[in-house]
Length: 274
Image 1 (tube, rainbow, N blue to C red):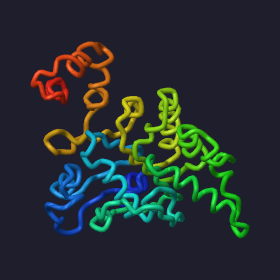
Image 2: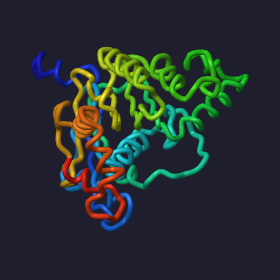
Image 3: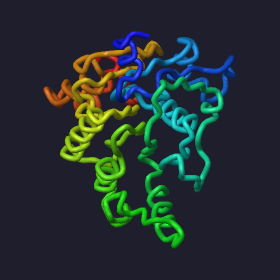
């Protein structure tokens, strides 16, 4: 192997190379009916680059299911946390992780963490429990010195990525913008940029046009045709819809609230034309 080829192979922030399905999926059963999962099976796998990769798509497309399954297949707790967290409050994860094969590069991440917005409350409770163990080193300092339960939801998310996330890490985030204001999203974007520069790899499911603006990030969008393709920032659906709405909200509001063309009250016509 030439020196230049070795540098490519050992590129910082490129730990997980590929996600693919092992064997034939159980057609007709959840989660294999989700568009993102069907696409993963049909494509033969998903190649992941170094740095930050965003997954975008409509609600129900399966992007969060993919992120969750990759986390579980990577040895991380389904409800969130690091690979050392082993708690369960209510099992709700899909079986997809059992079907995934992960191809890692020669370098392994120094640490791993899964931020699942909907269950971070449970992670916070586990952090407090572990911190009370007299036989273990203090845990709260790693999370900013304050229990996440004593911070707002958004503040606790930012504490996590600032204090717990460090260099050479592999991090999975499921809709981190769920608890963040626009200013909070900007702070998150700045931290994601720092983490990428510190040799981290991140896979993030998001609807946030703010986060998608991260320079150098890869955006993979699941389209209405069920295909997953790389798109530019201006092409991404959350960006296009947000821009269109902000440019002329009256058009959207008229169709949503007053002028439902087909008369069924679901407000779908404007969306189909957007």
